[in-house]
Image (cartoon, rainbow, N blue to C red; front, side, top):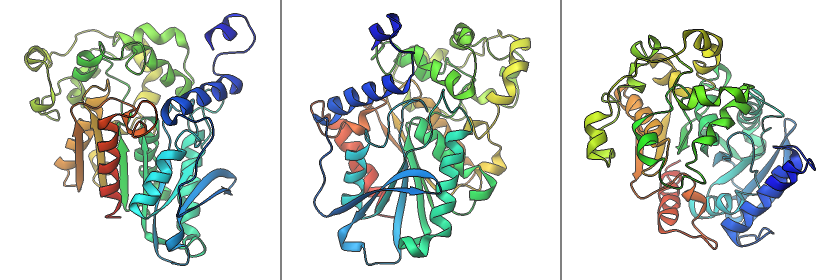
Length: 367
């Protein structure tokens, strides 16, 4: 892939390269280039409100009119992967939890930056809510969930005024929730693991794609110079001094337990003033939402992985919700990594991947 870009045959993040990458990813996670179908499911590709979706329906419930539904939002940094890459997971969830799953093929960056993908997700929530009768869906049992960037979108769509009150459950799986602190304890603790793949700090470029920012900002973000020293001591101090919302039990390193609460006296006020409208927008980064907005969340299931760079985002978000008396379940897998949940099968099947999916199914059965 890199060679084709270097030779000028295509551009980075082009649709062609995305498709090649998606196919490679599918083979790695399923062992197949094609998609197999689980017995007992009806699977159809549809278009809802102009947005492509794939619908998974247990055959045993097709005649029912009050079925629960999960709207699933795939991961991939808002920039790559597709509903095809998550086909095996969505089949598993629909079959084992006996629910309808609608996988949303939302628009991707950098071709379609914020708010395009979120607009698509919002449209699907509204479509399912308003057409629940014809879809055989119970409008009181609509869940939205996703992993990584998909978890970000799931939290963000709850913050949209038009969808508020329409969701009964959120599943935030290793979600991306903030972009102001690139030196959280988990970032520092885990960067040495899987450094050349999912835990590479270079992943921050996906923020730039989504927010339409210039890649020249990479060093500023990586070194926490994209905010100001004063900002770090303000209302979002908890993201830098993590004692309030990060219980010490989740930190492996004894050294970091002692040293992890220092607030850096560094920053770039001029740069921050240019970026803050995006960095502080809750529908881009849900951690920046107010207590009032978060207090309106429905039951929220949050999954965190011990060896994930953004582990702390998930834990702190769950703790914030708990402090606001929102019903929340935090499932932390100490041996988990960022994308283990789609490695529950295939050539790279992992025990922790199996356990994470079992846990998700258990929660979805309550929908």
